[in-house]
Image (cartoon, rainbow, N blue to C red; front, side, top):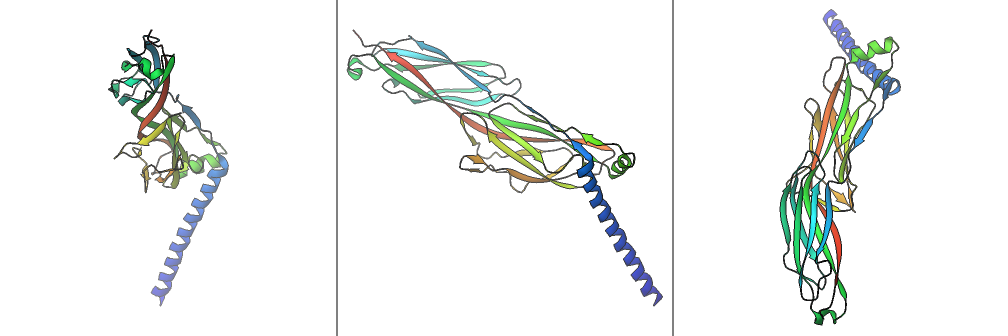
Length: 289
């Protein structure tokens, strides 16, 4: 009988202790929401990564039935990353005849450039009715690149939090987010105020956006690469899905580890993609006299 009573008392004690810890954690989370200050610092690099400069037609005004060349200068504007699988396609040349389909350039190294020469043949006098005419040269330029973003997350030890609260000191952190160069931007949003309490789950949302004038597609077999050396990040699905031209966000869940004091963590997101740019160039054709 006494053993039974003792067991009940012990179990009640355990339940009360567990409830106390849950309530205490809940109160601390509320205090974090009201007492902590979080000001994000966002740095976004330019969206231009490939410069396409026309060096003109040679000759500038071709004669009917003659050959001419369009020269382009392609420059990689990034300081660190290589532009890969760079190709120039002749999409349409109007009355002019394209001698080649385009040019497979391959790689362009950081801050380097490549010269592209595309040969054409002007229409004959019969085709243009012996009058001055013009051709619109339509090009499609494609390249492979990686969109990157680095985000910071702060986690706080529960004892450090209590210490700061007792001392009446404000808890303020400034997490930074650096969005890499290129037309595709990845923005990261961590739900909840920072610093986040240790051993706590939080939602993290990755949103890719096309800020350029071209079109993009994912590279077959590639997906969002999300990583952190010390945070556990669980993403049920990392495939890029586009609906009516918009990219759906990817929602993941992170778990902060046990920490001492206040600790900063880094989260990186990377998305390989293929980008398409369309350019038009007009050339006047003189009839042959």
